[in-house]
Each structure stands twice: as structure tokens, then as C-alpha cells.
Image: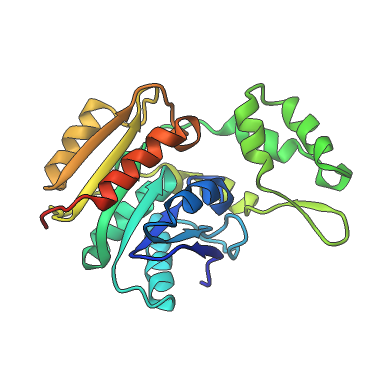
Length: 258
């Protein structure tokens, strides 16, 4: 599994993993902002962005993909930042390879199983008739017939790719992600007490990390900090980018006991 990635900056390695239906493109601004203090790798997960499309999709596989990526890049140990699906991936990675983690940052997700309803999102994506799309505005118009939220429309359009022949396609493996959606909402069973410094950043307007989730985190991470961005929802890195980056930067620079 040769994952697609971009790298910038110098310093200790920091690997950033995006959320469901996203791509590394969602994190390019943040990578540039952090590149003065770290070698930042932004990575497309399997079946997303320009990474390979495979018929299977699970957190176990994505954790193994991450291990293989680190080995290919010669990274013995790194700080990891994961948002949403990426956050669950780094938790599964912590279960399997805790010795490869320097610090852990989890953005607005918990280990529990969720009951997300993405039916209308998938309906909108499948509604876009790619063979009728001659320019991006055509796809945008079709999405708007199913989705009213401007932010979601623009987020999904980031995964629309123009081919050399002028045709369009979704970068993500839409069929497999639809079929394997139960794997995406599945819970991660934390099976140890992890000593490395861990930062949980949650959105104050999001319901993805509740008080019961914080108690679960505190039971498994012995060196943990919780930061709440009060004015942000689930896409907290996009909604409150300065506050998000300030929290990440301070955490990475801070000396922690292991």
C-alpha cells in the first residue's frame, strides 16, 4: 500500500491523517503553518484522495497502512494527528504500535461506535452524474439539489478530480466507502494504558466528544490534555484554524514526561 502523501518542513516528524471522505488537501494550510517546527507529512488514507483503491476498508488495515508508510519513509517514531476517521486510525495504531508514537493528537472523535447517518451525503454523491459533468459548476449544481449546507458542498467538491481527457471522477473510492461504512463508524477498543503525551481537541458545538468520552480517554491515557474550542463544530480545524493550530503548536513544543 503506497499511500499518496506530501511532505514539508524540517524537524521531528508529524503525520496528519484526514477524516472520512476527505483528503490531504484539507490539511495543506495547516501543514505549511507547522512546517517551521516539524517535518509534516499529510497523507491520503486508503480509498481516499490519490491513494490506492482497495475492496477492503477498516481501522485495522489503515493502522497497518500507517505502519508501512512510516517504515517506507524511514520514520521509527512520530507524532500523529488524526481528525475523525483519522483519529480512530491513530487510536488503533496506538493499540498495535505504541512504541512508534512520540505524541498523539486526536481531533474531535472518540473511540466509541457512532450512529452517523450519511445516507443523504451518499445519496448526493451518487446523484452527481459524472458523465454529464463538463465543469465543476455542473457537479456543484447537482450536489446543491441534495445538500443545502454550503460547507459540506465545498468539502465534497474537493474530492472531485478532472481527468486529462476533461472528464471528471471522484478521487475517493465511493462504492467501497459506501459498502464499508459500518467499518467507519465502528468503535475502537482501547486495550492498554498509554504513557505518551496525548492531546484531545474537541469542538464546543460538536457532539462527537462528550463527557463520557473524556472519562474513557482519561482511563486509558495517563498523560492527557483536553482542549475545547468553544466556537467550533466537528470540522474544528477549518472553523477555528488559528485556535486549533495554537493548541497543536503549544502541545508539540511542550516538554512532557513519558
